[in-house]
Image (cartoon, rainbow, N blue to C red; front, side, top):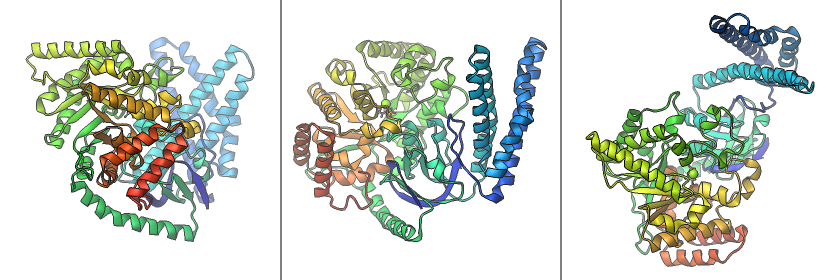
Length: 585
Ligand code: PEP
Ligand code: MG
């Protein structure tokens, strides 16, 4: 039995068989297969090599046709390598003798060869090393494709174990088959984690080397609340976790009942509970959990889940459909937040050195105006069909906001000229997720109708901690006094200027923070739909003066530990059974 500690992302316990998803990444984990799987791995290897060869030959023939025979010769080096027995035979032997996976054997052999070329110094050899790595990706791409096909053919539920996933890959996990997810990499609020958590399955990330400890088909337990993965559990552990699952199943009825109850504190103050979604199909779950509307629609997922850029009509249909599902409830559309870990790096001619601080989000939109206008037109068109609010992400300067609003005004004018119906008073808001925006909230307050505090990014930019990096995950905390102070400053300013303010970072869905957020003055929270009942349970157990006292006390602390201890103590006072699998803490 192997107990691996990771970062808790989405609560719940599952027991199931592991499905190890290989990916074309820089580090393919060391993995062995059982003796009876060796033959299958060799077939996979041969097929991958043959398919990569065939694809290269096709590329060579196309190049010969377009450019002539001479330039097409550059493919001969690649093709020669794939047929080179001195490379391929040891690779096959590694699978046969040591039972490593085909993917690992390929990565190991190709990368060793690339290293040898690199060590030879000259530019010509460095280029050869690059050619070898291109080839490595081609062959691994085939093997990964096969592993995806295997996932598609699976009939019984599995727990997916991966090194890392991009947000787009996470969005494509088929949750009718995937009952849990664990990864080596990632942080609490990395986008892949957020998307996996939205599926309502237990998720643990940042496990460092879990892919090396677990093989396909092995029994695994995921405890999403404790952030723990147990590989090959022994009998007493299995019994303990089965009991815990039974206890949680007992809570399901209470959760369903809570969904129907109003969301107000014991002294009658209403707290609006909106949902964060990535796709319109999540609205069903949102309403089943008693959500009041959509507080954050991460529309970039429209780009991440299709091969071509969505058209105006694609956007429009998605928003109109969302409004129909919401039946009169509000829909807050955040304009595309691409860049950083999403989309642009794979397509960039030259990857950015520091993408989290680079051309992402509204900055990317302002440099890709035709694409941005397409989305704005669709939002405006949809606004004729229901309550839409438009929200701009990652605003960091007033100029940026003004420029954005000018583009929106221009698109409105265009729609008017074309006789397109839209809501001319569509509420415009911004996300406060950069310290500069939080500190300058009063300047922005004059320009917008609402703020939404995005703590996922606000934490990373305030504390200088990459939200997706498991190696610094211990430094990423909403309980850092600097973060608490910024949230407090924004809620104060919004009160003074009467700007509606909500919070949509993941802490809005963590019961541990609910009292603090109410105490800081927030009356609208936007969160992952599956957490709505848990947060509502806290809301219905507390009164506002108690929460305000807690917020004042927390405001006097100068360490994260003090803040966390205080939040835990106060929550346990009102809900002593909160630790009993009821909520993420
Ligand atoms: C945030 O940054 O808090 C947020 C809600 O946006 P995202 O998680 O999509 O970056
Ligand atoms: Mg953000």
